[in-house]
Amino acid sequence: MNYSPALAQLIAALRRLPGVGPKSAQRMAFHLLERDREGALDISRSLAQAVATIGQCRRCRMLSDAELCPICTSTQRDPALLCVVESPADVVAVEQSGGFRGRYFVLMGHLSPLDGVGPAELGVGQLETLLAEGSVREMILATNPTVEGDATAHFLGELATRRGVRATRIAHGVPVGGELEYVDGGTLAHALAGRQLLV
Amino acid sequence: MNYSPALAQLIAALRRLPGVGPKSAQRMAFHLLERDREGALDISRSLAQAVATIGQCRRCRMLSDAELCPICTSTQRDPALLCVVESPADVVAVEQSGGFRGRYFVLMGHLSPLDGVGPAELGVGQLETLLAEGSVREMILATNPTVEGDATAHFLGELATRRGVRATRIAHGVPVGGELEYVDGGTLAHALAGRQLLV
Image 1: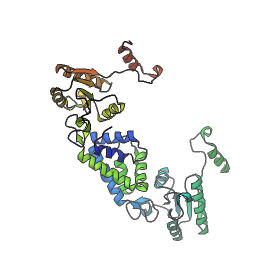
Image 2: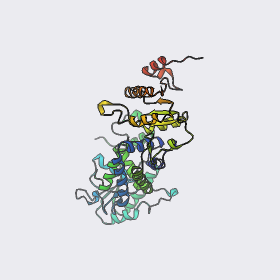
Image 3: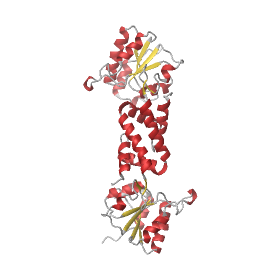
Image 4: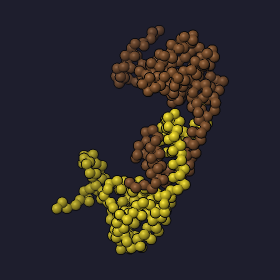
């Protein structure tokens, strides 16, 4: 198809969004140009501003447009609890669960020596500085339940223990509301091994 | 969730894209900021440029950044055939079928009196000017097979006939490669009514 150059350029650019293929990109471009030009300008401005202003929180590495993110500056948060996650999306997931009132540390990845991701890339130095401040008493390792996530949790757990900080790992098992029949074997084995006393 | 202001603003803006809900918008924002800031700037620039430069082709109303779109300026196109469609996406669909070498006219909608969409909004004046030029001999009505699309086709068909231009409607029936068993009743009734002599 012979699009006009600016249109072809826009469709190619929109394909850089995750999960957007040629068909969706075309649909987005047409929608914005036919029906929501104000929206197109809004997205354009927001992206430019986000790239210009959003960096990482100096303390927890969460995406933030201030030096410290809203969670790190909040006085409502328990500084004794530190939840370590792999990505900003994980922070959002834990926040939305509503079950955590401590602070976070975002690794922005997991240990992966083959990809050149070691402790330095994950900001482990920053994490050690944080632990050295002395207010953290428990470090909750909420990395993903994958081989790399487990290895990262293990590595950070040892680091915390050496500093006298209690290291815990979030529980893995059968999802609440799920049916046993449809749970995969690995999860079920985990759930059995991690069984807890009922009373 | 307490996002940083610029991040909240970006996620809200991305939700203006069609088919993008809160979860996808967040995923897109994080992806761009964590891993593809160059892509974010590319999208930002392309959107701003598209809004600034893309208007409608003076002749066929297709989205175009020049006064005339690439199809209208092409010398490879048969000026005797004019395919009338509802939207730019329909032009792309017909182009990709590879079965049409004429030109287009894009209505940018269909007749819908209750929504205030009459002939003027669909550029019927422009279409009449085009027909008055005298080169169009057949007008193929490829509006959608909906009540509004059919009404629009009927209206435009009469207009063409009055000017001595042959008006045709694309065939509606069982999709090629489809199985009769799974075709809906309306389509099947259409296919039966529109049956053609085999030899």
